[in-house]
Length: 395
Figure 1 (cartoon, rainbow, N blue to C red):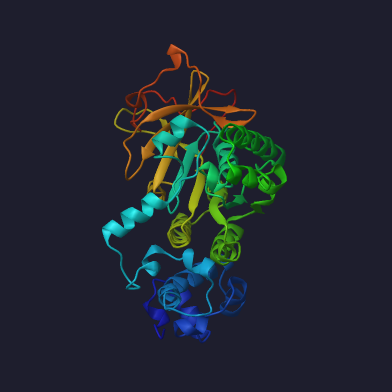
Figure 2: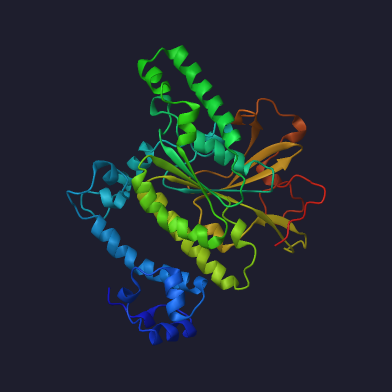
C-alpha cells in the first residue's frame, strides 16, 4: 500500500503538483473525491478523476483479496454474488471444468425473439458484456427496455427472476413503452400457466405484475461523462444492496464521449478505465451488462469508399465480449453477431412490435440477406443504416 506516487504513469505536470501538495504514496490519496483533489492540488477535475482511477486500480487487488477471505459477517446472498474465483474452495483458482459448469448453470436473459436468442446461445449471457451497435431508429433502446422486462420473468417460466439497472445518457427511456412490454410479458406467462396448470407458476404470477416489473427497473439519468464514470464506480455497492439485480444497461455508452473532447488520449484512458470497471462488475457480480453504441462514418479503406463502423474507435471494440451490429435492409431490421467467443458470425431478422421485440413471422425474398453481404467493414455497400432524409453521421 506504500507504492510511491512517482511510479504511476501520471503526466510530469500532475506528478510535480501532487508532490508539491504533499502526496507521496497511494495512502495519501485514499478517500479523496475528484473535486477535493482538484482544489487541493490545482488540477482540473478530469485530471483528478484520472489520478484517482489509476490509484483505485492499485487498491482493488487488496480489497478483492480481503473480500475473498472467509468471514462470518457476510450474508449468504452476498457470497453468492461474488466472483467465481472467490467462490472456489481454494479461494484463488478454478479449473476449466468448474468454469464450464458454472457457465452452463447460468440462465441467459431471453429477448422474446427466437432467432436472436438462438444466435446468442439462448439469450443475453450473464457475466459478459454485450454491445448493441446501430444507427438511430434501428431498435437498440427497444431491445434494452425489453431485456429489463425479460430479466424479471420468474425462474419457473425459464427466466432469471432478477431486476435491472438502466443508465440513461440520452434521455430515451420511456416508461409507458416499458409498461406495454411488461403487459405483454405478463400475458405471455399467463397463457403458459393456463396451459400447464402448474401451482408454482400460478403463485409466481400473483407477484409478476406490470407494477412489479416497473418497480424492478432502477433508472439513472447521466448528463455528462463525469456523472457516468462516478455512477459506474458506485454500481458494485448498489448491486450488493439490491442483490436481485442481474442486468445493467447503459444507453448509450458513446453519447457523452463523442463531443467536447479535445484531449483524445484522455478520452481513451477514461474509456479503458470504464471498460475495466464494467468487466469487473459483470464477472464479480455474475450479471449481464448491455451497452448501446452509435455508428460513425469511416472514410477510406482499400477501395476508397466510406462506410459505417461502431463509434469510439477500434480500441473500444475490445471492451465487449459480444458485439451485435443492428441495421436495416429493405425496411426489415437485422442483427449480425459480429463478435462472440463461442458462436459463429451470422445474421438474423428481428421485429419491433407494440408488444416489444419479437420474432419475424414472415419475410419477403427481397429482404433475405447473407452474412457475406455486409460482414466486411470495407464493403462497397453499407446496409447497416436505413436511408433517412437529412441524416448526417459525423465524427
